[in-house]
Length: 562
Image (cartoon, rainbow, N blue to C red; front, side):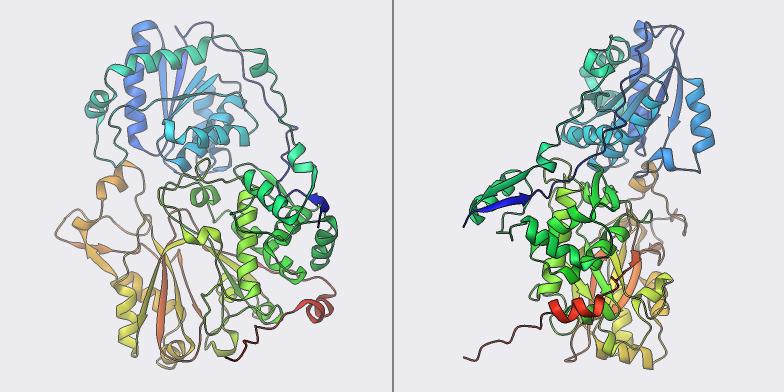
């Protein structure tokens, strides 16, 4: 069968604000060069080395340093530093912006470099070759596609906080003068016509339609990087129209602009990706809420999706909508064997790829990757929860339904038949991360045991923060200090013989009840926290929700006897 009028899952990008570069400097003598270092102190050390080489050529040049200690924040939106940052901008004539040593910082460095360029300050940015694609995506996301980006990697660049100026200068070695020359040239060489007036990129692949057999469409979409390689349901115009029945929002309503591509997540584009994943129309409200939760400022979205580390999104559903759509929350709560859980997760993964524009090896430069990036859902077992629903912990009403987003990386399971055993299991957790968190999942029997013993969810989490400890010598204190990741809720130990918290606070933790009735199990999805979250968004249902549920809800499989 030939399918025609197949819609594209790839998002359009608003290019109406494309920005040409500011005129370059005629000389650097007598000018004040802004030296902008990112959260890694090695960036400032590198800028100081470059300063020496600039002075050799322009002895009357002046320098003004600004160190932005926050790893994954857009400085244009940071009210805490706005006054000092703009005062610094007023004092400089041009800027060097360093140093995208890891993908997420390179992306945000691009955001911040583009912002400086937009203030009329000729800017050049430096990143490592591995993160060059992320840096370029950052400047394009802020509509300055021509910003001059230099990639440079000395033989040994220490990003783990065990360096100083002398070591950095030694490591930069003989390549430093050439690197400095490239940067000076980026600030002074005349602009090309394209740099002055950038040409909008074609959006034909986002707006066009396709035709072909199911295999041909699946292969074509995979060749463009729009699927994970598994067969898809073909998003014909008719199939997408049916998917749109699941929401009262108009098809052109913009739910978000998803970084780093800043793809326009219209309701229609969400529906296309949902259709490809095999969703039903009644899953649309959940997907829309998942996007809203993921775009919450509490979540540093790019920090997760464009990280060098290993994280994966978890979509957690709570409230009556879970039962309405046939979402599995009991036995096999973590198993991708049920249509609602599996296809919502898969659709979210496609939205990350096709509207966020996050592709493995380009924007997503994770060293190991994560199976959750295929998509992962779980749900709260409302029928056997001794506490209030999860979303109430985030300020919503008990009768609401909601999606909670979290980005863990580890999965550990324990069987705990007593209250002390549960608490001990949580205190033995030691997930990777500089500000780790965890999602604690208790089976109904385990939750009932804890609740009957007087333990609230918050008390359990507080206990874990207080008593989950490890030797101070096992914490990379140098990394935390040299890369400005000092916790705000606890003092770092000064004595290696002391112990310290594993979790700095409960800010990046939550607890829910899920699973079956067989036993007392505790599952911990550990990690998260480093880049914010968790975050929660209310699910908004269409006016004819009850009718839609009757039409589309599917039961769990009726397995054949054998």
